[in-house]
Length: 268
Image (cartoon, rainbow, N blue to C red; front, side, top):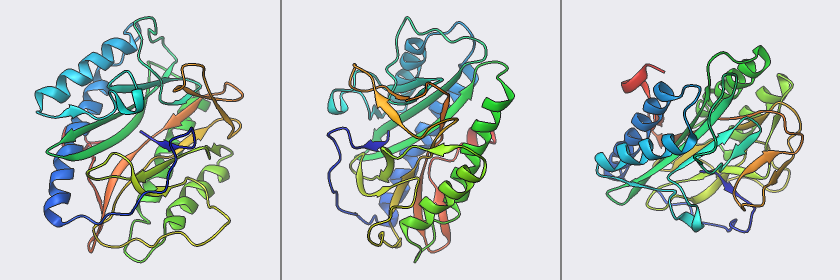
């Protein structure tokens, strides 16, 4: 779940984790990865976002974890389910049934043994337009390029630059109002991880033991967004599609450790 300016943005400390804590966070994130893979295999025309939410929560609880988003600042559901022009924080509903050609961004988090996991993926519903497929591919690739920058001594701005330069080279825009974040025994910790390079000041350096959630939110059109009257759902200002991919990553001496990797479940 992204951090944003909507009244929830406050400066948070950067907390370094021990190797044992990172192992627990990997366990938490692997529950998230399993849920997301289940959703990828379940999404089909006709299913409602409410049904997906219930399935995600059920699997989460069967893995002895609790949904991280449910009740967080009043969010009503376990799963963020954002459809087409919805960028993030879409609320599942019995009335929202998927149609062929839709794209659905699913963002899910858990709390397990006192630590959080958080990851997201955008799923095509059946065959989608070529331009939408390229939007998804670009967003996912921008995340991969960002992860390559998770190296001790680099700055947060190196991550931001990797996303922004690739996305804008492809002709898309990155959302600026909502950003990635540190994660650990709280869902949102410092530092914030923007998907664009901020002009003022130097960003923090990466040090061993930091854990961050990188989450490019990429729009087909303008970077501008607005929040709907429900106080949560963020949509693109021009109503063009948006994609969202996220991983939680630990900074280690051996390079980036993708805690929420789905390789064990899907090979993706």
